[in-house]
Amino acid sequence: MTGRSTHTFVCPECRRSIEVDDAMRATLLETGCVVCGAPVTEEDIGEAPTIS
Image 1 (tube, rainbow, N blue to C red):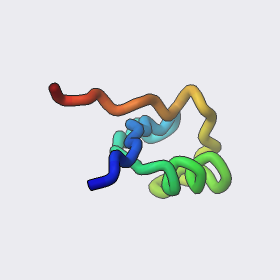
Image 2 (cartoon, rainbow, N blue to C red; image 1 turned 135 degrees about the vertical axis):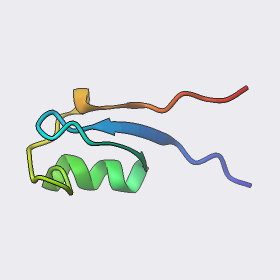
Image 3 (cartoon, rainbow, N blue to C red; image 1 turned 90 degrees about the vertical axis):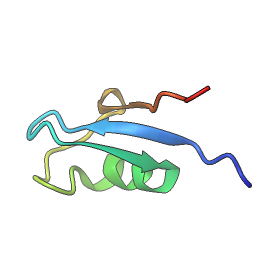
Image 4 (cartoon, rainbow, N blue to C red; image 1 turned 45 degrees about the vertical axis):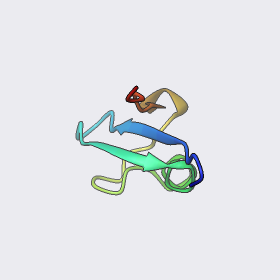
């Protein structure tokens, strides 16, 4: 099993929060929020908490 990196995205406009993988993170930064279209910055996407 590969350890895929996940991130938590919170839209600065509509406040939707979703967990995304690296590929979706890159897409969000390039195209904006999938819900409302607002621009997305690095600060809007953080690391998802890990469960120990």
